[in-house]
Structure formats: C-alpha cells, structure tokens
Length: 245
Length: 292
Image 1 (cartoon, helix red, strand yellow):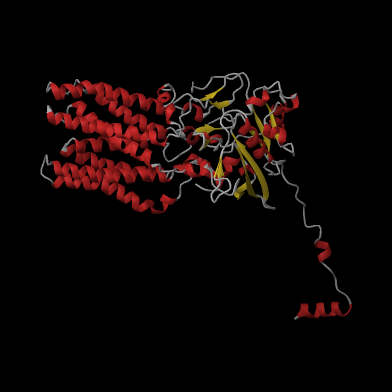
Image 2 (cartoon, each protein chain N blue to C red; image 1 turned 60 degrees about the vertical axis):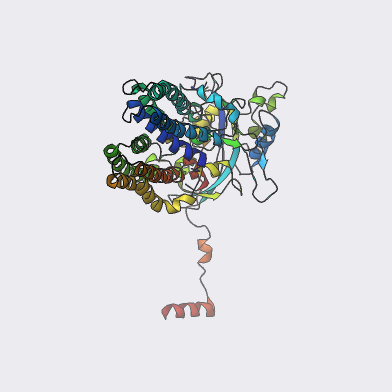
C-alpha cells in the first residue's frame, strides 16, 4: 500500500559525515556492485564503452566548493547522496500501482519491482534525485539500505551493514536506528548537529548529514615578519634614497 | 522537466475530450440520432486517444492495470478511476441520445461532473509535486480546467460561452506565467538548503558525480526549450485563446468550418502551452547539479 505508516518501530538510516568524506567514490562502486548481484533487477549500464555512457546508480557523490561568508579560504566538500528514507516520503504516496512502500517495521522505503509500471512519477516526487529508472529493466531502482545484508545471517556480523558503510575507507558513513535516541548514530547526530537536506520540502528525512567542522584559521600571516627585511649598506642607502624620490 | 510527447498528447487530448463530454453530458450541445453518434464518438475518441497515449511513456506497461489500486493516496490512480467511471457513466447517456433520441440534460449531469473531476485529477498529478515549484500552485488545476472548458465549448459550438472562456483562458495562462516565474524563489529551495552547507557560505558545484548524463538529468533538467520561452508563451496565448475567439466572433453562427478551424488553432496553442508547461518547469534536484 502506498499510504505511509503512521509510525515505524525503527528508523533505520545513514549518518554521513561531510567533515570526513574524501570523495573517493568507493561507496558508489560498492553500492553498484552489491545491488547488481543481489536484490531485484541489476543496475544496468547503457552504452558503457561507447560515445554516450550512462547507467543506474543508487548513490552518487557530488563535490561542492563553499566560500565562507566570513572570509577565508573556500572549502571543498564531498557530498554522497542516496535515498534518505524520509518519514513523509512523497515518492511513496504518488505511486499509483502500490509498488512503492515504506516498511512499518524499520522505515526502509522499497520498490516492489514486480508491481512497478515504470511511470517515473516517484522519481519526479523525490527532491533528492534518489530514484533512477533502470532503462534495461524498465523498473524504478532506489537504495534498499541493503535490506538483503543487514538482516542476512549468512553473512559475518561485521558485514551486516549497507555495502556503502562497510566499504567506506575513511569512516564517513554510519548505519543505525535513528528512532532510538540512545543509538550510536543518534548520539552522533546530537553531538555534531546533524542536519536534514531541503527541510523546506517537508519530507522529514531519516538520514542525517553531519556538517563540516569549522576550519582552523591563523590570526595573521605568520610569515609577514620575514618579508619585512631591513636592508643595510649600499642596498640600505639605495632603499632610503628611492623612498625619498 | 522533460517534455515527453506521450504525456503532452495525453493531457491535451484527454483534457479536450473530457471537457467536450462535460458539455454533452449537461445537454448544452444536444444532438440526437445520427449526428449524436458522431458528436459523442468525437468526445470519446479524444478522451480515449489521450488515455492511450499516456501508457506510451511507461517503461513496464504490463503492470499498467495495477495503477487502479492506489486511489486512496495517488492522484494518478484516482485519475485512472475517474476516467474509466466517466466513460462508463456517460455511455448510457450517449446511447439513449443516439438510439432513443432522448435528450441528455439532467440525466447526464453526474457524467459531466465526473468528466471535469477527471481533468482535475490529471492536473493534481502535477500540482501535488512540491519538487516542481512552478506546478505546485493553485493556478495549475485552474489552467487544466480552463483548457478543458474552453476546448469543449469550442467543439460544442457554443459561440458566446466559447469566446468568453477563450478570453478567460488567455488571462489564466498569462497569470500562470507570471506566478510560475517566481515560484522557484518562493519555494526556498537553493543549493545551500539542498546541501545544508549554507550555514558556512555560498555553495557552488565544484565537480559533478559523473562525466556523462543520467536518468535524473535527462528527466528533470531540460534547458533547451527555455531559450524560446517568451516566443512560445505568445504563441500559446494567441493560438489557444485569441485566434479561436476571433474566428468564432466573425464566422456565421453554427458554421462547422469555423468550429473546425477554431479547434485546430486552439489545439495548436494548447500543445505549445503544454510543451512549455513541462519544458519550463524546474525540478529542485537540478540544484544538486548546479542547474535548474
């Protein structure tokens, strides 16, 4: 049913640390790999080695430059973006076929590919660009929060997290229950001032982003004294002479 | 937004068809016998052709029948139901007018109301999207209903109502352009709110996530049409509203040729307006790509 559950027992989601992400795209690759071999239709590439390659990805990393409003050097911030598993997910309620749904038990937003007619309206309804139509399979693809890993008892316990989280080499991605205020991810969000993307869209995202920490800024240029050289001898005389001209 | 031909044909033709069927249901154009057959057939043809076109953009049409299942939450599902119920409810009205020469007024009222409800549901598929601020506005349903009522009145040969509705449609279109142009700014969505980095300062896309294109960019970021937006706006208003009004004003009353000409002009303008409706609409996901 594409009516949203009034409440979910858990709010599983990701916390992404923009202070730590180095923009290596390992999460993008791990996501594509896992989700091509497992849940649902594979994530296809069209014209992969040709003139105009394009493909389906559930996670993409943008890079932004931010010019601080109080001066100083600009900052480069790498910005991974995937489904935020919103509490008020507009992609679910617009779905006419019932293919899109939000699970009452853990809050994961999923697509039942057997029921999807590929109209694309859910992708239009998502402000974050989290849903992409797979042009080979003709069904809508989106982040499943690796639902086939996190509950999978055939995997070692350390691997029972989304592929993007497991692979991140810098520790910028965290997975957990954001509905439990005592969970590690909730603590992280509270400590670091985790934020919602486009709160004005009213989607109430579960995933949170940790803002980059303020950069250190030296009070004044430490090398300025070295540049103020007092010349002596002939050079000093010339210096004083030229100053007077 | 990408102006997909199937969706433009769907909204324009089914809008015209259901608008016309509303007048037939109300008995405002009340033909009987053989004439009634052709008139009702025309209304059904426009409505059904539009609905058929809407299935052409589906990537997986074998699941299209499931679109009737989610009427409680989805406007697209409601639109499907409203369309089918309208066509079924109006069928006996049409059949009695054709075979029993029974005038359709009052008896056709529920069908007429349902026809307009169908057009309203179509408009709400777009109006509901907060992600496309230009559409997320009260004037979008007014514009869709305006097209349906105007096109229907022209087809029904109602001279003075059609002329008045043409002028009203011109005003609604002009208002939708003015109001739409400031919607993205009003929505409050910026690259700063999209990334949450506005608290630091001004944000700029430094490097995209990939070198090529993708489904999102093809579907949501359409910039080609905006270059000629001003010209197309004039074409839309002139063809959809002003020229049909002029033709109906100077042509002798009840002239089928005048009606045909007015309909062709109106449809030309309607297609231009609907193409612009999609091509001009900015989706907030474009912000992430440093575009709009």
